[in-house]
Amino acid sequence: MRRIYTNHALCSGCRACSVACAIAHGGTAGHAGGAIQIVRDPRWGFEYQAVCRMCEDPECVAACMAAALSRDPETGRVVLDRERCVGCWMCMMVCPHRGIHPDGQAHKAILCDQCADRDVPACVKACATHAIAVVEEDEVSRETVRPAG
Amino acid sequence: MPDTIHTRYAIVGAGTAGIAAAEALRETDPAGDVVMIHGESVPPYCRPLIVELLMGERAADQILIREPEWFAERQVTLLSGAPVVNLAPREKHLTLASGRTIAWEKLLIATGAQPATPPIAGLTDVPMLTLSTQEDVARFRPHCRPGARALLVGIGLLGLQAMTALKALGVRVIAVEARSKILPMILDVRAAAIAQRRLEENDIEVHVGTKLTSVGRAAGGAAGCVARTGGGKELGFDFLVLTTGMRPNLALLDGTGIASERGVVVTENMETNAEGVYAAGDVTQFHNWIEERAEVHAHWVNAYRQGRIAGTHMAGGQAEPYRPSYLNSLRLFGLPIVTMGASRIDDPQGAQVHIAGSEVRPAYTRLVVRHGELIAATFVNDVTRAGVFQYLMRQRIQVGDAAASLLAQDRAGMEFLHKIHAEAISGDVEWPASMDLIDRYRKDHGHTRWGTDKKTEKSEA
Ligand SMILES: Cc1cc2nc3c(=O)[nH]c(=O)nc-3n(C[C@H](O)[C@H](O)[C@H](O)COP(=O)(O)OP(=O)(O)OC[C@H]3O[C@@H](n4cnc5c(N)ncnc54)[C@H](O)[C@@H]3O)c2cc1C
Ligand code: SF4
Ligand code: SF4
Image (cartoon, rainbow over all chains, first blue to last red):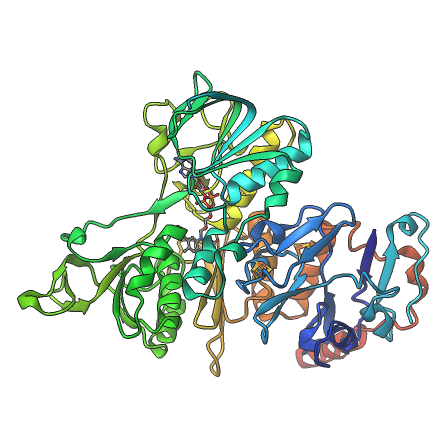
């Protein structure tokens, strides 16, 4: 099982991850279309990466009134079926981690898919400060981290 | 032909509470028989999405709560179009309208709620609609001609959904609310004013503080109908839509000895007072710790969470006790609003109110803190961070002085949140130790802080 870790102390707030995510998922080159978003306080320059933590007991699944969100116990991945999503933002109302984001254009939610079909997730690849890491579960114990880029 | 089915688990209701219960009990007990009973004849569906159905945005087969395979994979026997007419908790069986009986060992009552009917004279003399089932949607259809006038009674969540659909269908909407503000159960006056403006900008005729006393056909053979208000006003309309709220479906409980007041009385494990009988979802009432009273909080998230807890206990598993969160997510013609807790109370006693607004666009955020705990939050327009506050409220985390920082999203507020996150999901946010090698890029926030500290020192000196 894959995990994406973020480190706010390394994040420079440049949003390259959001843009890379948006592009990788067929969107436009704007940060708003990314499943990873940067939350920041512009005055103090404090920022962190808000991305889905793939909760074991996900609140968003409980909240989704269109049955668009579900958790696959095999991969441990929380999956969003965009076809079913009605853009009610109930998931955003409950996610304690700011892990799910609004797609204002399509009026649907955006959720990290961990780039399941890619070797290295787009955000990990894009981050210049190595503030995002991807770890495969069987590697977690050994703590070998796939280098970015 | 009357016969008897024997099952380990019977679930009455295939709404989100019933589905969540089946899902959870299967995780604990992979084998015990499950029979799920759905009173309506169409396959179980996502109730809120009937609004999409009415608008024509989605077809009936696109709002299914689960695909047919879901039931097959979990070996859940679904009986649709099978209203239950009698519950016998002592004998541990129930009877369907068809005469069939089902003998069960554990029972879940998840029958949901139905629209309330306000005391207005003449309701049966005019075309009157409610919106809670697919059948209701079919009844709406012939009335929804462009230009027709709908008189909508009750501007709450349900009313808002109904008017959104009616408006999209070209129907003219006249909406009345008995209380002095719209969405009176969830918005404070300032948020309600923003919301009302939004409705009016979208050509909804809004009358607050307006109670209908009677309705009837227009006099002298004129087309349409007329409603009279307590204040002596007359409002013309073609059909009436009742959206004054929902009432738990308690009819089945009569004479069973299962305790109910406004809803079925349940423990935090979703047990009723009858042995082996559980209840979950809109049919239940629960103790509201903020306002210290029993309350029916008809809401999807509550129904799902309660269903999971009930299902786990029915199968003999262990679940965290139920903690309610009073949540609402609404959209007023594109304007998103999220509220939680006692957000409707304008001047909460013994509490501090923190407000942030915007002059340039309709944005408004309000937090209410009592004894250091968050008891209400309202987000107009900026809803994406609402979930964090939901968590703080439900877990009753001491926010104390951080409230103002949280609202301002300043550094102190962010660091507070980050700490809470790290505690709540420790392990999950743990940065892999090997990655700590890469700290040459580590940012130094210190210089900013240091610079400011110096300034403060100077000015103090
Ligand atoms: C138009 C509309 C919009 C809504 N929008 C929202 C929203 O945006 N957000 C939100 O959180 N909530 C919303 N809700 C509320 C939400 O739908 C409910 O909170 C939720 O569906 C409750 O789930 P439940 O499982 O308790 O009951 P329900 O979904 O109502 O399911 C009840 C089940 O019990 C069955 N049943 C009832 N009586 C019998 C009987 N005698 N015999 C056999 N079966 C029976 C029914 O057939 C059904 O299967 C909305 C509701 C409506 C009507
Ligand atoms: S969206 Fe939020 S609640 Fe859902 S799995 Fe991701 S982090 Fe958890
Ligand atoms: S916005 Fe989409 S994914 Fe989120 S709760 Fe609503 S329907 Fe589900």
